[in-house]
Amino acid sequence: MTLDDPLYGAKTGEVLKTPIFLNQNYLVIGVNNRTEADLAEFAKQRDSLMQTALTERKNQVFEDYLTAVQKRMEQDGKIKIYKDVLAGMMEAEEPEAAPQRRPPIQLPKRQG
Image 1 (cartoon, rainbow, N blue to C red):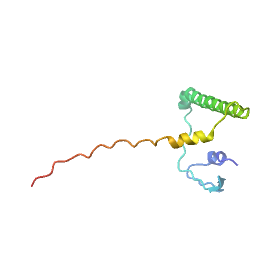
Image 2: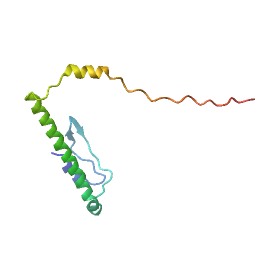
Image 3: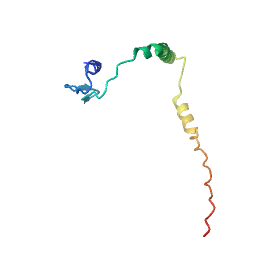
Image 4: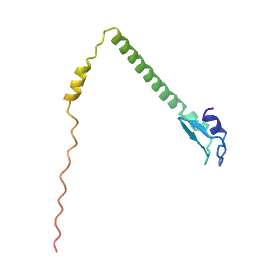
């Protein structure tokens, strides 16, 4: 059972009778308010949403490709990572300096 089926079938003010087991927890769901999708608004934004999804997918495929190439090159001995050198570089790096604080504003003392 997925979460979508009972959720889309629920009506406003209804509490689902059967708890849903998800991520090692039981969920009891109640619907306070329901707003149907505005298909006209979706149609306006469809191209933008599709382009965003396509860009995200392309980026993921490229990252997966680079990871696979790096792994293959490491296995073939074309890339050697010297972990001791990396560890030394990490230790040698200075932590980022905290931003400079402005001196406190001196207010004139009250007389009287």
